[in-house]
Amino acid sequence: MSYKICEKVCIECPFHKKSLKGYLGQNDNNSYLEEIVEMWQQEKPFPCHQKIDKFFTFEEIKKHSIPLCRGYISMYKNSFKIPRDEELKKLVNSISTEEAKEYLSIFEFIPYHS
Image (tube, rainbow, N blue to C red):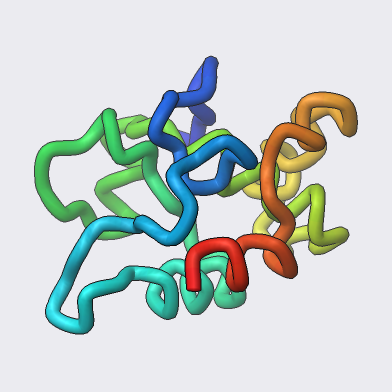
């Protein structure tokens, strides 16, 4: 199996420039910002929040073909970061520059949700 990407954007996608500013859900620290940034920096896949109903390991995401978040993948393109993983790299390259403009870069994402 290989990774796949969501076909369209979720209205609530936190990586979209029109997302609710400053809100990423809640955990023990009241924000997932640091966790998402760390996953992005480590080039880990990030599944679409609307396609999952429980926590999955990265192997399970691939095995079950759970689509990765289109906004998260676009954030790589907007931040001029190409993942080392060949499959993730293909997904980043599949996003057009024009479409990517709808999403935040990592440099915009952090202050936008801080």
